[in-house]
Length: 198
Image (cartoon, rainbow, N blue to C red; front, side, top):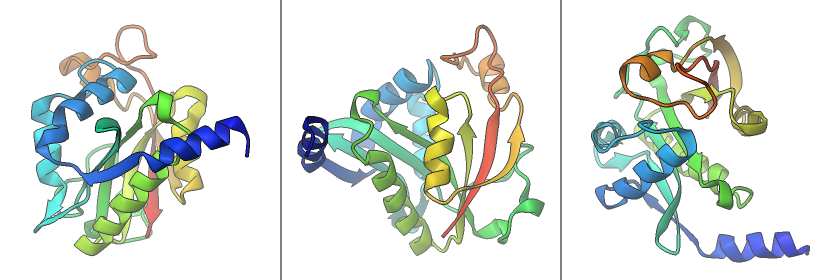
């Protein structure tokens, strides 16, 4: 076992997973804005996303905690709690669009990457989404992530590329105060529409 592997193993044993709840909102907003740029998340947005995570009492959104600090989260909208928009291509999906949940965001603290947090969060969200009645999950993957890690990660976990969309987050950067961490001025990042069947 290498020193890095040993350290990851020690860290993994201290990571716990909880369903998203209001007591974690501050940590989720802080981490989201640190990783994705200012105003990516706000308390108001997160409260809305939290509500969309549920069908009945089943919540599909999760957080990862390391020594009681939020070090990762996956925000997942239940399949009946979101609507397709111009960035979605339901005619290209291999399943009924009414059975598709939406993977809004997956975020892991850069200092904690490589510990299996992202995959564990995805697995927990899929388990809950399936219990809610979903057959697949859609995500818009940020193709400007360092080393294109988001695309690689989602592909490794079974995600299939449906379509690439230019300027996916431009509206948020021009009208909602989103400050993209890689673009000067308005965001011009490309988003990959990807579907993961369960």
